[in-house]
Length: 158
Image (cartoon, rainbow, N blue to C red):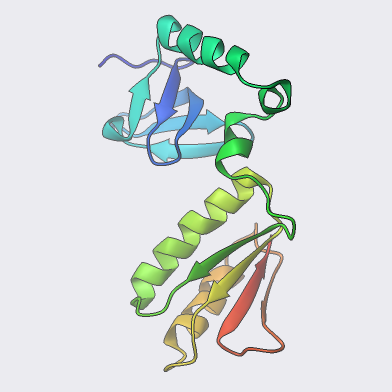
C-alpha cells in the first residue's frame, strides 16, 4: 500500500476519515482528523480512493437532511445531554487503566466533550493515585476531582 501526505485514509480504531500529514522514516503516520492529529501505524489505516468517497457521498445523500449536517466524528461520538463520557476501571491494572484513560480522553476531545466520569472504585487507591499523577501532566486536562457523593468515582474536566 503506497501512502503519501495529503492522502485520505480511514482510521480503523476510531472509525473516522482523516488526511495523512506526515510519514516518518520509522513507518509511523500522522493523520489529521478535524482539529486532532493521531499517530498511526500502517495496519491501523486504510487508504480511501475516489470511488469509496463517492459511495459514502451517495449513502449520505440518501440520509435525512438533519443527519447530513453532522460530521462522521459527531455521529460516532455524539454528545449526551450531560456532555460526558463514562469509563469503568474496576479490575484493571494501573498501566492498563492509564492506557484506557488516554484513549477515552482522545475520544472525548474528538467528540467535543467537556468532562469524563471515571469509576475507579475504592480498593487500594492505586488507580486513583496513578490517575491523579498522570492527569496532572496532561495540558488538555483542566481539572480532576473526586465525586462529592461517591469516593469511588472521579471527574476529569477537559
